[in-house]
Image (cartoon, rainbow, N blue to C red):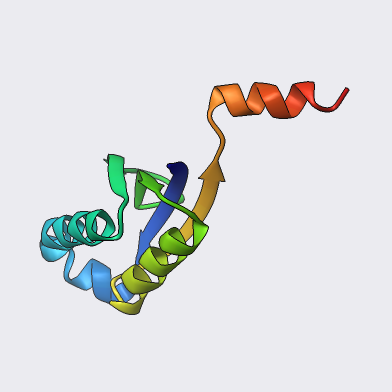
Length: 97
């Protein structure tokens, strides 16, 4: 499984309906699960992003579909970063020669 960090911001509509956000999170967790992935952590954050999720998915295409489906609901905008675990980081750096 590949790990991704998803930065999430409410849209104006999402902020207006913020009380329904926990239900939307539950639906997002279910959707990603049905796509073969999972949420590893979720945080409400202060600062540039409203929320941050650490998720796993089988591949980039699955995560891209998931992010597009989330955004199509109109409540959030997402930015996704592929995350390399420490062992992969060390392999990548050591391969530099």
